[in-house]
Image (cartoon, rainbow, N blue to C red; front, side, top):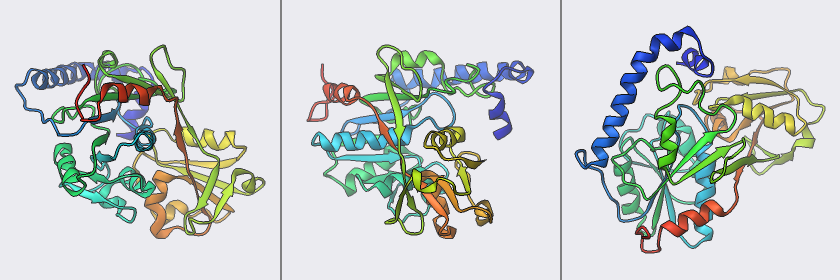
Length: 330
């Protein structure tokens, strides 16, 4: 899969070989969506508003930081959100509550990361309808749900759709799977409620998102923190098993940190050997990777916490569409 992904961001002979399969994929995706839209396949309406944060490409684009930002915004606005996720990378199929101490092998790295922020309940499940129902039964105080990913999970009716776009990689070569990285055509952006551009120029009526963070915490001793300047002059290694590892390495460079970069595939299951850098004074990593390294981390491991930054217009847009009783506005 990784070798194919490398071809998605340029045009080669392989794309033209795969184009017939992409056309079939596009037809199947469009047919499936039409079946749900016309009521032939049954979708489920839940008793609380649903906000879906997804993308139309394969790979990470910044959905999880945005979901956490939205959860905080909703809390600040008087709502009681919950978060549902597929639990990608984990082994769990049935609905499961995720806690700060949950195993990422079971629940997935992103779900555990969100649970560790302790903003609101987090539940996972391959069937997001089932996960949502289980969350609401366990937490009847929740009056709105955020779905981290799930744009194409049409069985779950939604009140507000957000697509996150990687502002650097955008849509790759513009082809649908498997010739390119697209899950749905780019025209899908015209049908959602909001488009968020992560780390790039946003067009009119789009929202710009940046990830901000300049302080680290020690993975073995989370109460011990350090600023970027504390690592100046040290021998540094950095690891990243996220959708776009270079984004993390570039962030470190902007902080003035010169680290030897070690990229890994998205959702990589780290082992002790992946942290075996005997010459390192410090090993820098993302929060998403940290949850998978806790069991075998050493005192050299430091985690960069990042938070999404957006303007308040997106929150206003959501609140204007969703009324306090959970129904859409006219």
